[in-house]
Length: 348
Image (cartoon, rainbow, N blue to C red; front, side):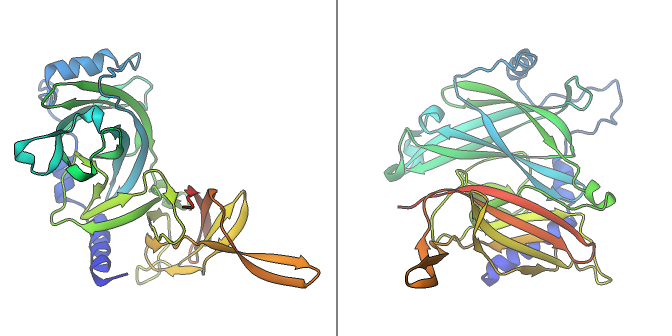
């Protein structure tokens, strides 16, 4: 790892463990306000009414086909960052060339959302907010049928929730809505229960340092922001031999020595149909924040037995579905945890 990335990750870890000012400003409005005072809605009245009208039946407005398909849960002090993932076609977002956009196609989008708590069974409004974003694509790369991943980030405590969201084009006024149920586990309970658990495991194509820590909510194209990281994940989880994605996640429930250091051993291997194809050298860590490059091999070692005898030969990996298997052992707490990340190997 180069020095710049090492500094970026070290700073990110420090921020995780001392996460205060910016997040406090971005937290949903406190519910300890005087009962007679209703906080002013962050949403326009017509958008709020539209979302509430479709809430019971989950009736969507499909003019923009908005659909959240995945959720990343990232750590922060005393709270979590939810990153909602959606995939959208360029044509549906109505990218256009403007005089002011230079040699780019551009679109300006507003996302409005409400978050309801579902712990009691009946949806209870917890927070509502909005974000505005301007997205650009170089003219030479623009294809109206191409799709990109977009990421909505917001801080939340653990619990069961419903996200009601509306995405609108600021120029054409076209609008689409969606509803998405999700749960954020209380990972910190793992410590009290003597167990380990991890936040979302994701593979990154690349990551960079942001000049300033971003506030929430935010809505990004191709990357999500977390602390001071600008992270580009593999949205499709399609990997090629020779690539080296960066695995990143946080472990909760580890024990620490007198110097406040963890003693973790992690074994990584790649499997196909449950069979181990490649095993990597076990790695040791003294921090529960894991950042690990994972080289994707192009071949596997196979035992051959024929009339020439027994030998080991290198054979190319076939395309298809594989798993990255992660076995974690806390050497102090004597607890173990296994995690798996499915991916597709693409051979060109």
